[in-house]
Length: 493
Image (cartoon, rainbow, N blue to C red):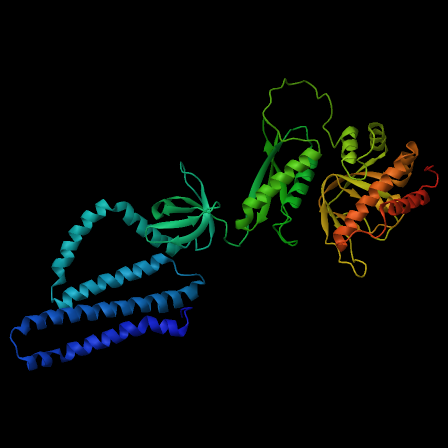
């Protein structure tokens, strides 16, 4: 049945039904009424009235049948069986059939005309109009075929591509008797004739499920090892679509597509709801640029180079020590390091590679090392929050992120569990190496304690909505005391 309320549905049928009854009664008793008048002059008027009443009766019955077909059959039974609203084309065709049938009934019953001559004349007219309106007729029959085959439905997001035509994407708003209306991604209504729609290749992003795959291509130079490229691109893709998918959604896939004269072509395959595909693509492209930049890489471009007989240097497996030093200095904790201290720091780190899912640090364990994320992505879980504070949600950290700084500097246990969300390459700075770094510069410990205090205050303010009660200098001195305990052999003025 139709989704209209009962009283509204009744109002659709009562007026034409009452009109049909009144006109029928007038037709039945009209002859006796005219005989009582007894005027010959009204004989002609009786015939006109009979014609008018007959035409009105057939018209009212046609309206009644059309409303029954529309509200009971199409909007009710058919729509419920299909699970979607009935396309406007079926409603329009049903109305056209009712009008044609009512017109034939008027000629046959009211005017008592033989329809054979009418059908013969309509055949000749149909041939003439068919030649003149062949495109429109093709649109109508293609629309009928679309409804029978059902390659698209109302609300689907589709892409139309045809050789020589512009690519069209949008949400299906209506499939009428002549054209299909799409709402594109820029809010414009695109009207596509059904004949063109039938000849086009249709990609339905909404079928068979409400998510779709799309591809972001990236080309890198051939001297970038594929495992490193895949690690960087996968981390960028995961971080880019984090806001558009659920934690249990399909993970992005990265693969090497082929070798070209420009470099190595990679594809990033992403699965998101079709209405979010443009926003997701934009976010992923931005993250790809960010991760490549922090890794010291750029997308490949056509270059003219002289071929060499031998490879002068092996492919780079990661960042150079100078680039690692710059990445350390970009963090809030180490941003005040001098150039000499940065170089010393880069010489003390150890480069490590972890598989996806590996635990980098475990909450509660004694801190032994801090890590700088070079390539890849980590998931940081703070666990349960102290009483009276809200727990911080798990967060992703990409290249340039530091893990375990407070725990290592103050010789505490790790407060967060950090897992590798993707394959990871990190620079590890253990406690002995950090001690040698602090010993090389007597002002470094106080500078790090001040920066760590600022970081702790910002973190605490984001969790509680208010700043720490301890003054800046008091918190800095507490951290400095922790550094003295952790590194007793370092002289701190």
